[in-house]
Image (cartoon, rainbow, N blue to C red; front, side, top):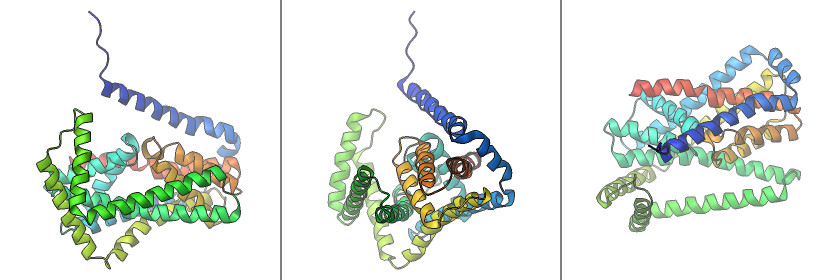
Length: 337
C-alpha cells in the first residue's frame, strides 16, 4: 500500500521551519566567524552588563508604548481595554509575528482572535489593528524617508537602491491615499471589498466569507473610521505613543552600542535603523529575520563601525528586540487562553 504524500500545509510548515533554522544558524554561528570571531568574543566579554540590562528595560518600555497605542485606539472606538490585557495581547501577537508570519500578519490574527472571543465587535477590532499598524509604520516610513534623504545628501546612496526605495515610498503613499479614499467612500469600499472577497473565495477552499458577514464588517469599519476621524486633534497623543514605540527601541540599540564601547553618530544609527526595519517589513521571513540584521550590519559598518563590532552590536540588539519577547509572548498567549 503506497504511503500518501504529506499534506501541503504540513509540508509548507516544515519548509518554513527549516528556512528559519538555517537563518538562525547563519546569523549566530557563521556570521560571527566571517566578521572575526575572536574580536567579537572579546567585545562580548568587555560589554557593560548594567547597560545591557538598561537596554532590556528600554525594549520593555517600547512594547509598553505599542500596547498604549492599541489601548488608545480602542478607547477612541468606545471599547476601552485594560492596560494589562492590552499588553498581554500585544506580546502574544508579537511572538506570533516573530515565529510564524510575514509582515506581522500572524500577530494581527492573534490579536483579532483573542478580542473576538472576548466579545468585542469584529469590525472595531479590525480597524483598531489596522490603525495601530498605520500609526506605528507611518512613523517608521517617515524615518526611512528621512534616512534616504540623508544618504542622498551624503552621496552614499547606491543608484539602484535609491530608485527602488523611491518607488517603494511612492507605492506606499499611493496605497495609503487609496485606502483613506475608500474609507471616506463607503460604496466604493464595499464594491472593492466584494471583488477581493470573491477572488479569495474562488482561490482558496479554506476561505468562505459570506456577503452578509462582509457587509457587517464593512459597516463597523466605516463607523469606527468616523469615530477616529471625529477625534482628529486627539491623535497627537496617539501619534506620540507610536513615536515612543520606535524611540525606546532605537535607544535600546544605542545602549547596546555603548555597552560594547562603540559609537557612531546618532544620525547614522537612525538611518541604519530606519532602512533595515523597512526592508525587514517586506522581507519574506518572520519578523524580518536575516534582512534586518544584514542591512543594519552593512550600514553601520559603512558608517565607520568595525565589522566585528557591528556584528556583535546588531546580534545582541536582535537578541533583545526579536528573541527575548518570544517566550514572554508565548506565556502571555497561554494566559489569555
